[in-house]
Image 1 (tube, rainbow, N blue to C red):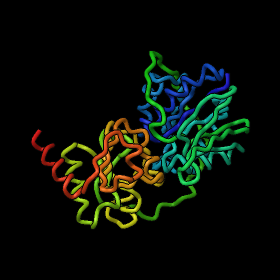
Image 2: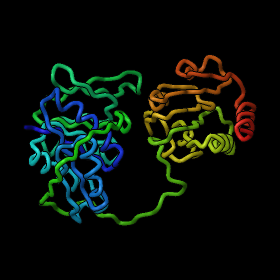
Image 3: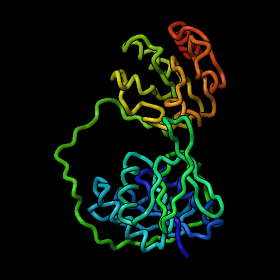
Length: 315
């Protein structure tokens, strides 16, 4: 039996993809395989088996240190052959997008990245991805014998099955990476994972000056939320690019997204459309964000945000 193969360097994304692959497997007549590559990922094998992988191909080869994409592509091409895979699902992370292209080139396969929806139609997979600056969703199919799809994190939910997959040790012929690291420097600031955040406060051009970002920080702290921003604020260097939500940043699915001073252009809202509840604060009652919001407050954020913070702290 041919397989559907899953790989991501993110454990949570790999579990999401394996869970959905299990749903696709029956109708497509495929088995489900997963790859865990590198010493840091070896412990994931049991989790992937529990979530639906029939076979988990495992290697802790030293060549995977740092997860260079050129080495990963060589390894996954060999796993595709061993697994008899006809479909490969990758996580569309920064590394995953590059890996998708490299792997597809090695396999002579078609590849679709940044997929935000994947479904079976007439027995084949159809991927959806934003196009025209996020104004529309483009639907794409891959006609090559092996199909590669890089899927955005949180596109699917992580399910649970009662099974346990077979662990298959890999014996790979791997070259050293052609990329040589000259220097590593830690990024400034606090690490953030907006993909996993349950609550997010987003700030936008409604802020008058850089110092006013502190209003968003105070509100986020009062809500135990992560602070995010539109691309323009990162372009101004008011906040780091890791905090961008939208077409140029994270696609989020929090329980609560509170948009402060954000007009609601499509380039931003594609990153928050999956939120369970959206609350908007904007002084322009015609702002597009209100068409998407579940709750809206029309007013001056410089008055509303301090009042919200005071109320929240009093709870």
